[in-house]
Structures are given as C-alpha cells and as structure tokens.
Length: 269
Image 1: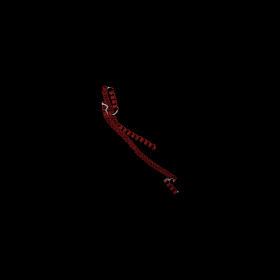
Image 2 (image 1 turned 90 degrees about the vertical axis):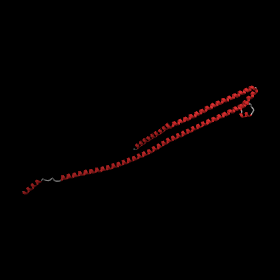
Image 3 (image 1 turned 180 degrees about the vertical axis):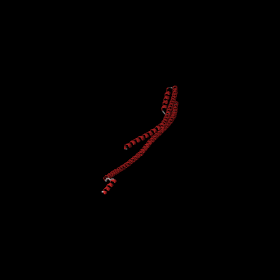
Image 4 (image 1 turned 60 degrees about the vertical axis):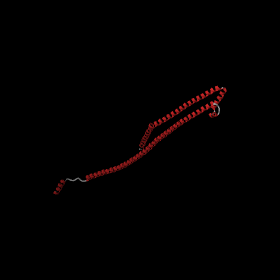
C-alpha cells in the first residue's frame, strides 16, 4: 500500500509539473508572438528615426560648415586681394604696414581695431569677422536646437525602453505569479488527493477489520455448528446402539397356536 501510494504521488506530481510547464510555455509563446514583435518593431522604428535625425543633423551641419568655410575663404581672398592691390599702389612700406595691420586685426579682437585708426582693411576684416561670428552664432544656435531635439528624441526613446523593460518585468512577474499559483493549486490538489487517499485507505482498513471480525465470528459459528452436528451424530449413534442392544436382549415371542395345544394335552392326561 505504501509503495502504491508513493507511485501514485510520483505520477500525480509529474502530471502537475508537466501541466505547469505547458501553461508557462503557452504564456511565453503567446507573449513572444503578440507583444514582443510589437516592442521590437517600435524599438527599431524609434532607433531608425533617431539615427535618421542624427544623420540629417550631421549632414546639414557639415554642409553649413562647408558653406561657411567657403564664404569665409572667399571673404579673406577678397580682403587679401584688395590689400595686395592697395599695397602695390602705395609702395613697399605701406604694403608692410598693411600686412602688419591685417595680421594684428586677425590676431586681436575686432573691437580693438574698430576703435583704433588702423585703416580701411582692418575695418573690413573686423566687419567680416563680426559677420562670421553672427553666422557662427546662428549656426551654433541651430545646432544646439537640433541637438536639443535629438536629446529629447533620445530621452523619449529611453523612456519607451524603460516602459518596455517595466512591461517585460511585469509580464515575467505575472508569469511567475501564475506559476506560483499553479504550484499552490498543485499543492492544494495534492493535499486534497492525499487526504482522500488516506480516507480511502482508512475506510479500506476499517472494512478489512470488519470483514476479519465477520470471518472470525463465522468461523466460530461454524465450529459451534460442527460441534453441534458432531454431538447430534454421536447421540444418534448412541440411540441406535441402545435400541439395537435392547432388541438383541429381549426374548423371542412364541407362536400363539402351539401354546394352546400343549396346554390342552397336558390337561387331558
């Protein structure tokens, strides 16, 4: 009985474990087929959008920088050409002064040359530098705006990824909760089955005891009945023996007619 109970417990445990594994696998397949592709698709879309935006920003920044460099180079070429023409017209000393003034205007801030009397080329260089500074400031502001937009996009992407992680954790926690619930249900069912098995085993043992007591009583009654039958047989045999002995000991009866003749003859003589 103990071996049968252990075998039934092992079979029941294996069945419930397989049922839990099947339900967990179904839940995981359902999640991977329905929610996981959507999450991956959204993540890829967000990454593609962010990459395209970053590439566009980088491309536009490169183009703007190239244009600004071309404009700056053209402006410097024009200034140098005008300075060379004036130097050729004024002579070697004026050319040297103009060159020194141009170098000083490039090396020093534009405000110092605007307040001094360095000549017309310095004013043109300062004006060109101010224009470049304004353009570069606008470009830097635009790039800052693009960088801010890209930062917001990346922030939204991080928020979305955090949301996906939380949803994934929630899904995993839900699956684990379902597994725990299934384990609890299995434990409760196992306890109920074991209780029923114990009750059945107790009932069977009680019935076996009752059957044993009935068999014992029946055996006793059979013994009493056998003794009664044996005593009856012995009494019958004794009665038959007594009757036979009585019959054998009693005298044989004489014939009725013969006795009368003998009596008559004796009287006549």
